[in-house]
Amino acid sequence: MTTHTSAIEVAGLRKSYGDHAVLAGIDLTVPAGTVYALLGPNGAGKTTTVRILSTLLRADGGEARVAGYDVLREADQVRASIGVTGQFSAVDEMLTGRENLRLMADLAHLGRRRAQAVAGRLLERFDLADAAGRRAVTYSGGMKRRLDLAMTLVPGPRLIFLDEPTTGLDPRSRRELWGIVRELVADGVTVFLTTQYLEEADQLADRIGVLDGGRLVAEGTAAELKRRVPGGHIELQAADGERMAELARQLPEASPNAAALTLTLPHDGSLTALRRLLQEIDDDGAVTGLTVHTPDLDDVFMALTGRPTTDELREEARI
Image 1 (cartoon, rainbow, N blue to C red):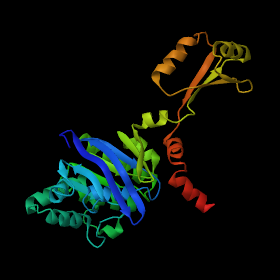
Image 2: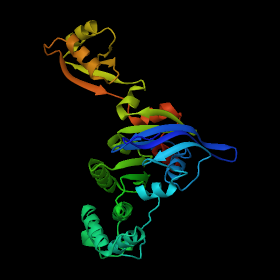
Image 3: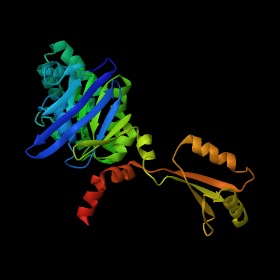
Image 4: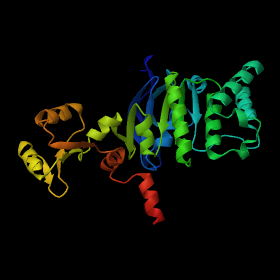
């Protein structure tokens, strides 16, 4: 089922707990060397999917191949091919940063010389070299998360699972981790990411799957998903009232706002539609500004799942 260009292929994956179907038959394919982000509200089945694909949980039905291996019949080969960074840090806070990496090297059966080289390289890459001799308990949240990801990379996996890796991090630490993910993909590593931060998926993912009610309700690039949601529009700023009236005659589908000297037109976010509009407008100074508004992933999430994002739910709970 898996080709050399696919890092993950899933068909009809199912998992239930009693009468509750957590996964109700999902299908997805992740090309090698890309980032695939799985979005969904709490309880949608994101972590369950990761646990099945990383051989930590047995599915009730369906097929899944990871790194070319069947997750059920070739679990050992799958484990040898992947790295997993879960929601909760695997860092031993009583060990130093270097000792944590050496521990992972021992578990991966690396030789002493190779383990030392790998640990040194990862400490440099994750900007932890200066803190290598300090116990991890003294690290900031962002440093611990970087160390956690570095530990995942000790065996050199070409496919890693990141299950909500930036939860609880401040914006700066989150963006630092995004940079690391981009570097990994540039090196050819495949990343399967679950996240509740829609901006994270927008920034990192080549393709996004939206999971809800145990089913994959939508899949595509961020741009493709945004085009599925109504509400995109272009706003033109007119030079004066007379020219706004002329533009309104040229563009009968536009909604004018005389007070703001603007006209709003429906727009699907495509370059073709924008070119068509520009061809209809005379370049005589009538338009002094143009803004393209497209739905964001928050709009997509709300439209597809019928509920606000987790961040919005948390905000409501604080009010």
